[in-house]
Image (tube, rainbow, N blue to C red; front, side, top):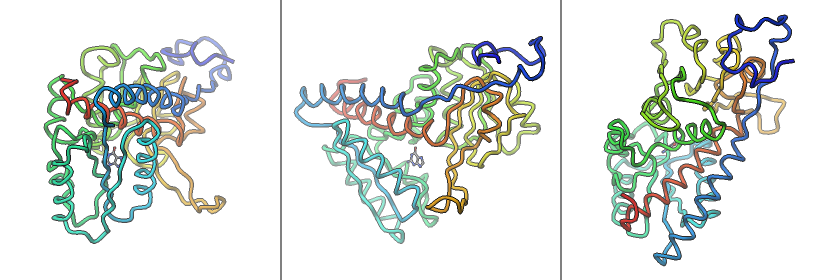
Length: 320
Ligand code: GUN
């Protein structure tokens, strides 16, 4: 049996052993452990900030409607904020709220000096214009990094607030010691929250970046051909288990940012969480892989907390 690190970076054709030797078991990346490390760093930063300025960083999440997964994520964000000493609050507006009601809420948070970071949980009810609402958040409080001004800073190579999930994926890759300089990186999914900003982040100059990024999407002519070239494969399409084992280069690092609820009557709650990668197949081809749950998800929350602290520092002029 080959160790996964022996295979990293090598193709099947380069390996002389018998076929069964090629069956490897990927290392399962522990997203919870990496997130715990980030959260401990943030907690330390929050403590120093609070001691120095006499108030805690404030982070408010606006949840509109009754999308069940969103409610779960928002509860997680509030709890995690409190655990690191951030003044985490949630404003819950009803499903049939008007867009003006959301604008008014955001405007009052923009003015509130005890609130340093604002996040409006997506998706919003269909009657609302998400882009307009995102744009109404003060760019200085936009801990989601989705305001065009912050996306512009990212594009221009001087990032301020970077969306939490791409930041978390970059942190996982760095913590795992993955060499991104010159690596072939395929990102599947061009969504505004993950794929598109991640493609910019990982193709920048500098540490934890400098990769050759291919951003794949529904118009990609031969998806498997592109993904099979990738040293690092990121799946962020939101399509359960679309990436199969044969689409992965042997020894690749696989990051699964998908979370779909798939019906499963054997489970008490009637569903299971599935990633965008067929895990059981991928684990026999990749050298390392993030599980769902317990991979990227915990990092999304941890990086949001990091952005929350950054927003508070910006507000007091302690961070440029
Ligand atoms: N919904 C799922 N992920 C996110 C996120 O990172 N930010 C916001 N605002 N909504 C989300």
